[in-house]
Length: 273
Image 1 (cartoon, rainbow, N blue to C red):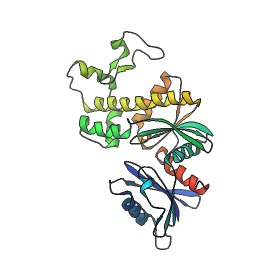
Image 2: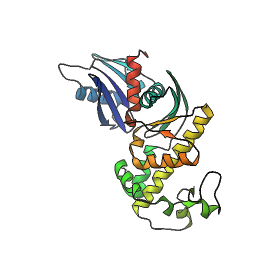
Image 3: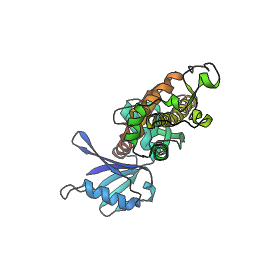
Image 4: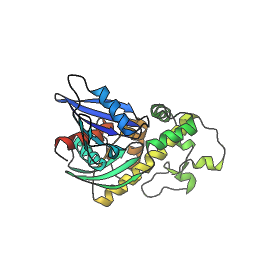
């Protein structure tokens, strides 16, 4: 058996081929040493009749792994290469800015087999979960997403009409001018739905604006977003809203959370090493 493993900060994604299809397994990153997590993943994946003999590894602490772990040979694929290759494969494009939105966010200029890190953001899924714990009493991303879809972020944010009295550029009067700015003016008791909506907007806007500017700086017309953060409908809504303001668009392919691990598998099969 050959597989690819993406050691994310929050999730560990594993894929391998079953005939023409890709089989996927997902594990929580429990903070244990990466070699121990590799052993646990291999034990869950392989069978006595089908041992795991070759794996591409990427993400997180993959550099700490040896080149050989017992009978298992490891091929280390740089995360930037995995992100770029996977994003282009899932989107069907031959060049794009690929945004890997996970616990943190990396942005990669991908042109065919070439990939280069452009920029990123420390504001990502980890921020959503960490501030969710503080503001909402939960770090569960699905719960935060569900709350946000039912909330109104403008109950926490200040809008442009309130801040400057007019629209600015492409931004309408209803666009927010200051994230959580209303709460800086007065102690407003807001329901968790509104706080969650404002939190998702904050995280999504930071990612969207950086990505749009990075793509334009690189001369890339298309932006592909992968990573488990865009599994959340509320985050996708914010990305679409910001894209509309700036005349941009985001391509979010099916199964975006598998972008990096699929890229690693393709790099392995294409002889990256």
